[in-house]
Length: 587
Image (cartoon, rainbow, N blue to C red; front, side, top):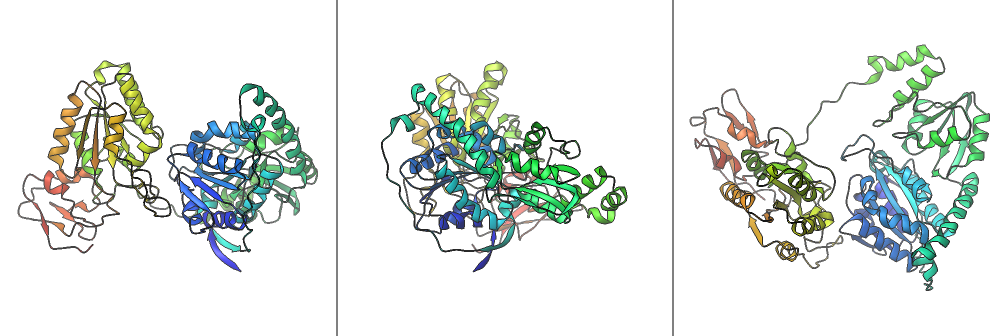
């Protein structure tokens, strides 16, 4: 049986077929849909964890307990999970353990463009890379077998195009999950220095064995074609190369660490011109050059962004002197029309909009965080000063305050409910413990919104929609030492402004919880807004809200009733009663 699947759907199916028992992760594009599909296979215990570190620790525990386990996250999530990763590389596994790192070349939804293949080399664990949905499914089982055979966690590295592209996948019957016996073994699993020194020897020996395995692994193969061009590649770039240069010889590496040195040398001997095609960093190229081989890589290709078949063909053809063909590919007729840019905006009715409108009015210095609210940095709101990583807002604001006392009373931190659960709690404790004065705004929209509405410990539901304990944010921040806590409806602009002024002026740290569900959860209020043309003066103050439902007409504002949710923010901003609620909209 064959089925059209995205890479993420195929990974989930691969986990099911390979007998995975436990799957954990934290949502992050492009990895999110993996767990959302895994949860449909009821034989797998799937969960969202508060952050990636906890998820990997759950996976490690499941592995030590004898089960096959899989942990999902986007590339920056591996930074959070790096602490357990490097030590689990020493302890090894019992049941197979995969860490799925979904990298994001081109930064479609990320704050950086890091190449997580280097984590494999750094932690001394194998890295497996599929190039399409079929491999995404099949390689899960192979990677789990590698994990168990070599007593190691395995990094299963994907990229956005593999995660989200669809192709036909052949399905198999699932393997019955097998629980391996747990044997108490402190020398293997308790990483005190004396035992860790012994395990380091095991890790180095394991790398040698993995390198030997790479020479004959089904993950790596040579596809002989013409002798003139030979390309070493893997992942999605393999598909680009096959499309761009169908007659070239290709060494496809499904296991990008450790590399099969003998296979690479054999391939290099069989071609006239050797190229490495890989997005982002010269991970493969550096290792090929270390073998003493002459190869083209980042001398002709960029380290930035995604590649295309046209780009690959043009660069390689130019290098081998096929000038005429390269110029043909570079011509406007073959480069494609540029796609119009559509800047991201907060949704109509977003509860964050009024908060940033007010912060701009107050001329606040705003340390931001990862989530929908990063859009508060864009015009016309332009009310955010920094965004670094998950949970960074509180510590960043404290650092600014410590650096310059003039920031006191002006600086606020903005963080979402899910992000606060992920890594904001420790920042708040730091703010209290080190006697900061900042105001923390928790934008509680009752969901993990930007990644597509996943539950978190503050929503009271699990990944499988089962009711669970709902963390009380008020009690939690009070337990962290905050005595000044206020809960505000972000659609009440006067109250929001008054509370923010009060708390920013307070001589101690404070928390304001701005609570209103995501506009995509509560999609309409029952009313919409229209313009009273006679009253509209054309001041366009309401445009400064940045609502997609409001646009400039020739002399007055226009309201798109199909987009308007009736949130009422524009009515509060208008001083001339030019905007009025009308009619009734269905839910």
